Length: 198
Image 1 (cartoon, rainbow, N blue to C red):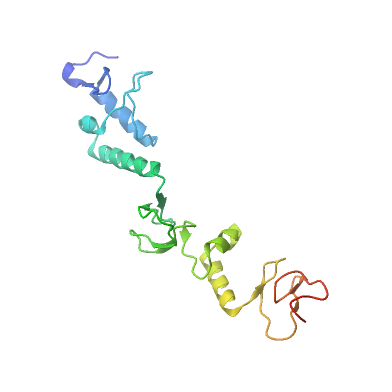
Image 2: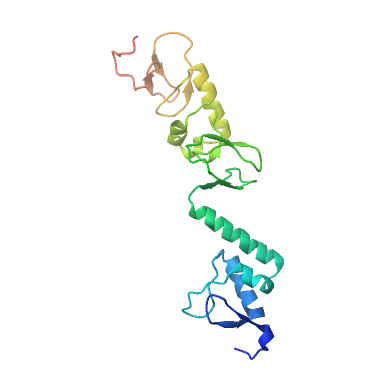
């Protein structure tokens, strides 16, 4: 509300309001720190937007560049065709412009493989539906590798304690280390005479 010389004032192109250049620069910087990319005129009730190309001289170069990046990212996010690299040390913004269902992908930034459908590191040897059915404590890279080995060796998993069991020979009636009895052939709880055989 201080009186300022006319050359220190900024007139917005989208509304009739005029503000001190220095104050408006600080206002824009604050909005960007709050992750607001569409910066409105500070006049109470005004819907006019401040356009970055008209405000370039009001903010430092790095703030102006951050504003441009935030606006671009907001446009990409609005398209709903995006994701982020699942690796925490990368987290690059990825855009899906193929329009097709994508499975295995490579991050163009860190060059590591990930599953675009599940948005996690690539789960080799295990399908997306099976991966999604796993508990949160079973989705690590080591767990997925163990499942891949178990699948190749045809190990059966106890449905009670989730421990893997390998049968070398004998009948399909298996008693797990937890005491749960199940059929090695089909994995269901053992119930006397069984359809899978012995």
